[in-house]
Amino acid sequence: MASDFEILGSNARMILDSRGNPTVECEIYLSYAMGRCSAPSGASTGKAEAVAFPEGGAARSIEFFNEKVKRSVIGFNSLDQSGFDNMLRDIDGTDNFSRMGGNLATALSMACAKAVSNAMGIPLYRYVGGMLLSVPRPLGNVIGGGKHARNGTTIQEFMVSAEGSSFLDSILVNSKVHRRIGELLQDRLKGQAIGMGDERAWAVSMKDDEAIDVIIQAAKEVSTETKTKVGVASDFAASSYYKDGKYHYHDRSLTQDEQIDFSISLIKERGFFLLEDPMDEVDFDGFASITSSVGNRAVIVGDDLYTTRSDLIRKGITKKSTNAVLIKVNQVGTLSQAAEAVETTRLAGWKSVISHRSGETTDDFIAHLAVGFRADMIKSGTVGGERLAKLNEVVRIQEDLIS
Ligand code: 2PG
Ligand code: MG
Image 1 (cartoon, helix red, strand yellow):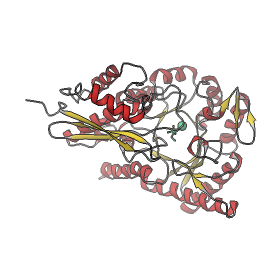
Image 2: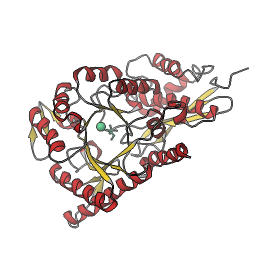
Image 3: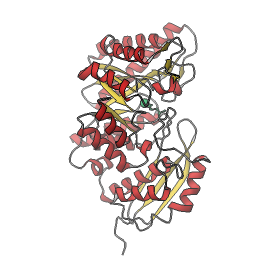
Image 4: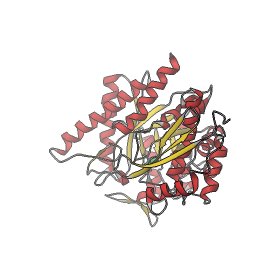
């Protein structure tokens, strides 16, 4: 007789993400439970991350699933998550999931964990984290551009993070800052159209320096109004505008040294509490210059720098490049590798931030991972259904934990 945790079947289909692009959703079936997961996609992807889809896109991933995966997973013990993930790697046969696609791997890997938690009758966050759980702080994008919006700022994301009395209180304050920025932009741009980027951050044609003034003003006003501390942060996604040795902003170009000075000034002079990817994705030393200059005063996060890979995080630890890591499961393709990345980060005494992608689905697995992994922060926008699917799930989880 099959054990309750033996995999009896699986399924993969194409669905659309928040940008309207095809992505993959998978199911893993056990005797009495099922797990379903869909994978998101990035626009500003790191060079070292898993390939989201093979040549031929999501359709080719589904074909690959039917040809090579569907039969192989039958009979596998779903409790052996890392064994399952290694099996996916072996079936793919490459080191970046370029044959099946990192998104198919992510959806299958997460569906396996969800099936187990459903079979056990416990929430996913508890299966992932056991007794050690914590509620993260929300970090949300409010104004930006880069690869997430045409005509926006050069810098990809300006973000806020409120320190409210509860998670709900914090996301409410973050969304108030988002609204306030919309009003401030309307006043400034006098009738000009105001757009939104992929993550529903405001996107308007303005200099980065102006956007910095706007976010600081909005955060201050909302902080005073709500009597809540609101931190201001940014994801430069600097690789996306680095070319031939310079960082090309819409209105100026900066050398490596100037980019380092600009980053440090945002922290020391403008009060930013967090910077993500301020330098090009291979510039471990440039990152280290910023981190050593700001010390404990700010969180310096590597995203494209590490792409959730433990080997690259270890390199960053040796070089003291950052003091925090962004974690995205589909950058490495499996849950167990993402868990290893979080563990590597924690052992260094660094902070971890569990993140959405710019092209999201309504799947809420990052909410569960943020709590189960005891991440310091969850980065998932401020407004928009697919962003709030995660944030509202953390609200439910917090209620669960204190009841
Ligand atoms: C990032 C992410 C999420 P993308 O750079 O941190 O904001 O963007 O999914 O496009 O890589
Ligand atoms: Mg990033």
